[in-house]
Length: 316
Image (cartoon, rainbow, N blue to C red; front, side, top):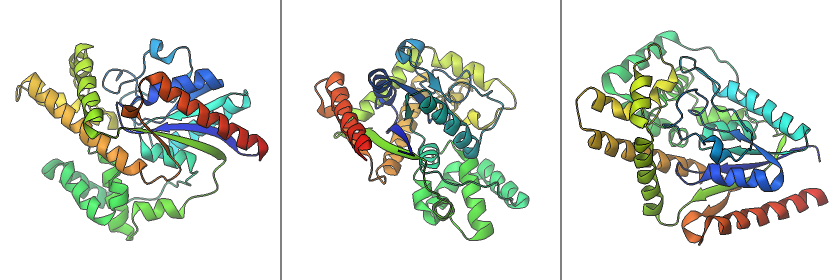
């Protein structure tokens, strides 16, 4: 077969993607490629929920923890670097397992979207950035939802750069980002098996999110965010969820409990946006985490699907 077999584990935050990806790697001789736009940055370990060395269980993880927080990083750069990781993993006879919740990264990589460095309207971009300062990013995101609801659905409010870019493209060309991406798709070099994690009962997932925030605070999120926000000249990483929401607490504008509730709410909203995006992918095989009696039962379900997929690939 000419195409590279890839397993992708996607879904909302706190759904257990990392754990499932690690178990798939252990069972099927795989290595993990992260698809998380914030886990690329060094130092944001707690706020971005990077798996610990213990949680990785000896499985190599790529595209994680390699970029200084002062540096920016484009989707095109991710696509190129992650693509090389997949080639290398496959060349060594191992199974590439892409895991993460950044839909734009996942789709651009696995659908082989051709990205170009288009020229930009400097004056228009400056105007939009000024509006962000004056009105807040939610105002621009609401505007984008009216123009390009599909693209807006996968944008976290923290992602100022891409929200501004999408509006810039629309106002300068009359073409939405969704149209631009669709027109740039080429044949993918990958044969992908998608798993998506979700919960039948929304409160089940939201309770996991709330618990994760509590654990983050216990594990030192406050100290990490305080140290991080004190740094000058931060890039897109300065919008990392988990740090930004604690800033009003550091400024004495609210209590830690209030800031924590804001963080939980922001994370729940992000999870909802992630699910809205991933549900459009009809190839995803959904595993509902609240319908299994144990993690091992869910893992076995995934393993059986992978075994059948591998048999079909061998017979093709």
